[in-house]
Image (cartoon, rainbow over all chains, first blue to last red; front, side, top):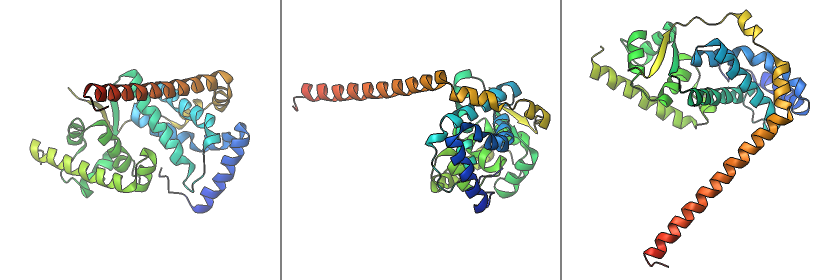
Length: 186
Length: 72
């Protein structure tokens, strides 16, 4: 699902498609069909309800299409911009609906986190730890560990610098370790 | 009370379900409609106006403080 999981040629050919869409909005359909599934899953994993996901995803693409003329190509895949809009739309959804934030955990990503950073962790313990974290920290954890994005990708989606993302992740893992030690999970 | 609703290994929607919800024409119609664009332009203008208003309030507070403290 990553942003930089594309070759330079693919990114450059996408540039032509974006320029076409900037002139003729109907040409946006190529990009819409290519990214619909990815964005749908990205939103679904954060909302968990298919009817709300449908609405949020269509809002993402409406915003994207209405602002496509302002888009400037910087050598970064188009999906980076799309994910950023999707992330903002999910935040807006929670601000307006005042619902409890939904977090999807899959066992494989918990295992990865377990091996790399927090030994002795299982999905049930992690869900307990998550409840002690701030919303921004959960978002960071989702992007970096549950969806396996690189630091560069996370930085693009959240509009942060790479070094800032690295520091935030370092602090987050340290905080999670402290919670584990304090609660005596190990 | 838990802060988040955590779901372990959630069931993802099927490909068919996702395809059914795809509707490019609706997206195109909404994004290019005059009503949508006018609404967002007004919203942006309103945000700008409220920002200017807060800056003016801050300047007024600082000036009145300076006058009260007889700096000016």
